[in-house]
View (tube, helix red, strand yellow):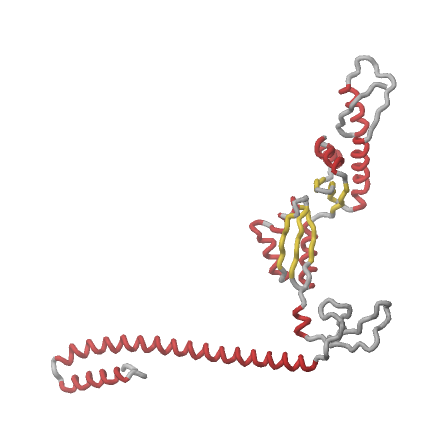
Length: 301
């Protein structure tokens, strides 16, 4: 049996079909088959309309719940605004006063460091506290090593962001360093920073002038130094960066400064040069003493 539901026209069609069947006419059979097909089609449309009606009713209920929640929030805000006192000269955000554990501001102090008199304590709204932006945390890493944070196809950075609930950005400073910016809650930022620091060895920076840095790059000094000491040296805009702790790199740092300083201001006084001694031979002897390749300009004594 077909449920005609809310469609009166279907009810009339069913009545007509029943009348024809009762009369027992031959036409009733063909008409009945046609009308039943129409009723089945109407039944399908009826089911679809009922599903649409149900979806609409669910939407209306959800909208009503949303409006009720919004109204409660507005009432809460109005109530809290009424409870607040008149603002004083203290800045609300990042001002001279600060909040204690119960959410009320401590009184400001005068310019002489004494407590200011007759300055009322101003309660801080919960909404105002939540509205204050959290400053991002920044770290600096070597640009050549920044890929350790990203990982293959960005999978390592994605996993780190999901674990710490922070957003991580990399900004190339174009000076050999890349700034890592971490946005998120304080606990998450600290956790992300600890993970990032674990990716890299400790570093020690050696400050060099542009003239000293140019000499270091032009004379293959870096290759010679790395081969002899086994220490990785990275060139940045302000000098060199050594991989290792301060204690490990202290003698290496001193040696670099000594090598570069002597190479730029090194004078060899030779009172008597044997006949047949070339400038190349003298340069080789001095290079053996300094432990690095050099180019000498010989002047007559």
